[in-house]
Amino acid sequence: MLIGEYIHTLDDKNRLSLPMKFRKEIGKRVIVAPYLDSCLALFTEKEWENISGKLSESSMLQSDNRSFSRFMFGQAVDTDVDANGRILIPPHLRQRSGLGEKVAVIGVQNRVEIWNESAWAKYKQVVETQADTLAEKLGQVGVL
Image 1 (cartoon, helix red, strand yellow):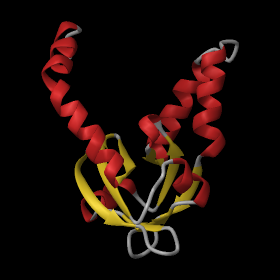
Image 2 (image 1 turned 90 degrees about the horizontal axis):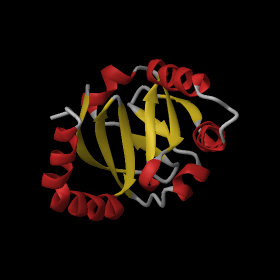
Image 3 (image 1 turned 60 degrees about the horizontal axis):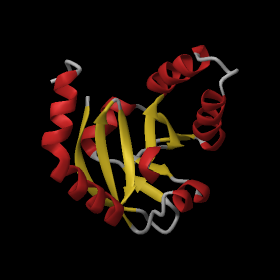
């Protein structure tokens, strides 16, 4: 399971060094895709196949399904994890998420999210003020 928060630096070649704790779990090849809340998501090949399978089972006759599939798959890239544990963030994804030199790398169970550092700090601050309400809603549907 991928968990934890790390602040890392994008180098001048758009490479991001992944946290050591994540490297064994994610393998040598990953998929980086646009994700929700203006962040990027990094998926293992296995998890990407799971997501791809679920989305392909949804009806392409529904506009929302087509749009979300285009959003995720149309801009996604597969990339190697180099010997130093770095991945390349393509310019179009870096720009899309407003990534600067410092980024937040967040483990979220089955994926890694890559955030602009200040956007992550603001998002986290808002969510922390809502944690009790969110937990109550999850409790009502039997999650907590």
